[in-house]
Image (cartoon, rainbow, N blue to C red; front, top):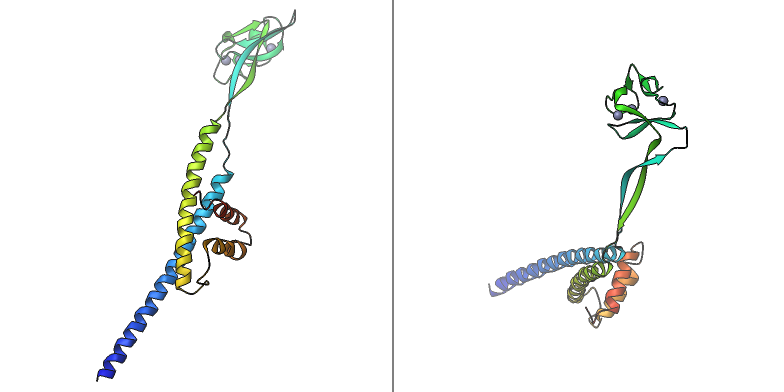
Length: 207
Ligand SMILES: [Zn+2]
Ligand SMILES: [Zn+2]
Ligand SMILES: [Zn+2]
């Protein structure tokens, strides 16, 4: 009777331990994914560059014509509808159709037009806003530091868990554990993650 109870208890403990191991294995995988996410984030932030914003302005300028040259200008649109045109083109100008201008965007009448000795020209000017590089670098470093600290914590926890699950040698140090990840898990097509790990390893004591 006592033996039977003992065996039952033993089985219960065994099952409990088995479940615990499964839980820990799942946790290990979850933490591992988190670490990968942190490393990706580090890689992404590192590649961020301050961007210069470029704006384009449109400017209408008046260009004086040579002696004896004329342009048919619309005074409503401030646009040259025909150049070179002859003196006093107006209704007889070739761009007019039944007294309506075919160039003007709206429904400008020939009466809105003037024969002038200058033409309008659209010029484009660009202007740029340069980012505050110091401020950018400061913010970049703050977020990098955050993700490195998160990674450091995860590496530490993963190593402890790895030892408990006998996945890595009990004597392994954090540096050796990172080395192992660099050489095995992150060696193929994971250059960014690998480099992030390398950074963490080098800055381990400052993080
Ligand atoms: Zn017009
Ligand atoms: Zn004309
Ligand atoms: Zn016109």
